[in-house]
Length: 365
Image 1 (tube, rainbow, N blue to C red):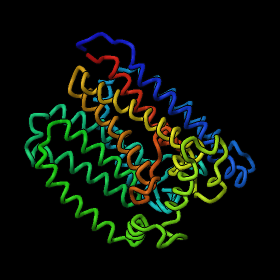
Image 2: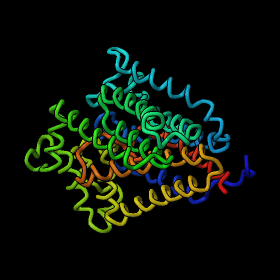
Image 3: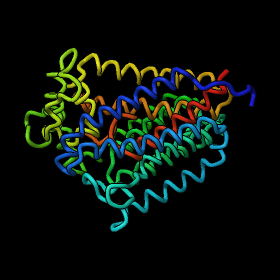
């Protein structure tokens, strides 16, 4: 290593700690009513979130202190394992169906989402691939198509579940990484046009996706159907005003907004903490992304730089899509708000990835 290891990025640690703390508080606030109604225990969801937060922080501490270069040796194996898991989860009787998608492996309420693991594994492999073969990235067939082919294959398997949200985050982060590695804009634009046509075909192929598009464009056309979630989300955000109704005072969490502790938790945050609270959370995410970009720029080698770009891309793309859906700027798709929404697989994997990012920052020039 070109430089002795130093302390990890303090700004990044503080932003992660604050976001995670806000997440635990808001998971309890958003889920207490639902948890008491369903399980007779208002702490049901937050207790499980706390367990995964502790596991995730433990993983973060480990990866923060483990030299990030070791992941280069495990990148191929991790990607292969994740591909196997994505195939296994599609097998009836093995994969668990939740929310209309066969995307879980596990027993009862505890399980893992292979698509969450694939996001990190894909970034690890692309960082290794492109750092080893960076001189070929400007070549369309030799440099660009092979990694994009892997991304497309993984996206296809994820869409068979179907899980458009996780697939979109993986593809978005992968494209950011590939662009940072030096791919030509003209090549990416050509492939982007082809991808857009493919996306249109996917939407047309499934009626429920087309309904989501039409519901996004005019949610009040079907207020009790496809537009219901967006309308209830806006009904939460609007009354929040500047300073909010107060912590714990949300009205929409009383069975109006479906699953308020997961995909639409930002609606509850905006309702209870107002524009100021929501903006403060967005600012913390911006600090996290800023420090991630800074880490990528100052990393001592190409692998570390691309890995930092990819991990930061996962956070940035996921935040953008989640908040875009919540405020009605994007069609509804199932995707969590990083470190905030209830969800064990997402929380643990993101904290593990952020630990790797913190380790890269320890070697920054």
